[in-house]
Length: 296
Ligand SMILES: NC(=O)c1ccc[n+]([C@@H]2O[C@H](COP(=O)([O-])OP(=O)(O)OC[C@H]3O[C@@H](n4cnc5c(N)ncnc54)[C@H](OP(=O)(O)O)[C@@H]3O)[C@@H](O)[C@H]2O)c1
Image 1 (cartoon, rainbow, N blue to C red):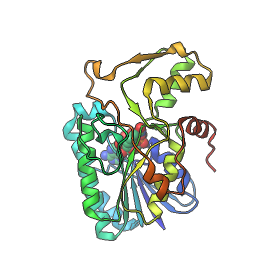
Image 2: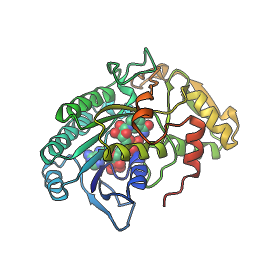
Image 3: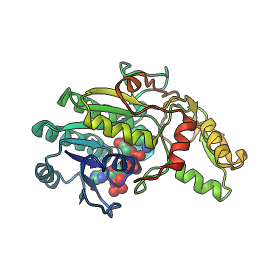
Image 4: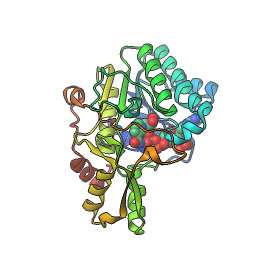
């Protein structure tokens, strides 16, 4: 069985690779140096915006499943570069959904808790998304494209992802936080942003499971701890033995020049607990897992 992973060098993809390499023939797409050089893993260096090259590669690989992690994932960059965000987060998703439909590949799309406006909290899969920034807008459009292409496709809404990079690098706030704490730097964390963080190890395992099982539709991949980002950072600093004073309390919606953020984007993970063999974990369990994880 062949699995195609987009965003191969990114943060989430690193864990997806670690959890799929024993059971799948892996094909990865990325734009930089190949972080993995192992038998059974094939790396393709290309820009997903090159439609012709990507289409031809897709026909060559003929994947059984695709985990589409590639995105412009930075909220503020998306807000300032809306045309590019639309091309990457919507246009590429449309292309991939079309190719998956044509060849009968199952598509697992990485969406986000940010699709919600943060007014209600504890969002379930049946709650209606409502964007408060452009990144969220592009992800909602991506979700609609993926769901309408096939009932077998999956929209996996990822909560805030917490963890150390497993392979490659990418967008890990935990790695950045640890670097700053080591240097004794103070770090601001928003108290207004309530989340249900998921650790990157649990997440990678769940995404691979979804690529290989029969579930289709929307599913929330979130942790079991509802917490604001300031409190979360305090818990991380305490666990790692750094002074709590280095963690500063801020309000992200009062910071000038930033795109609006959802306040309470916590998600209910009851469906994931029913559907998946992968257990959903608390923040403490997830932190312990990611700090001690060693890829085989
Ligand atoms: N991390 C989180 O907390 C979080 C939470 C909710 C949802 N998500 C979603 O989860 C997914 C993975 O996030 P992540 O944290 O792993 O992000 P990431 O580390 O930024 O990885 C995204 C990857 O996409 C690649 N990419 C972007 N544009 C591309 C293009 N035109 N062609 C080829 N590759 C391209 C990037 O490649 P380059 O390295 O070459 O730029 C990068 O490696 C994203 O869809 C994100 O929206 C993440």
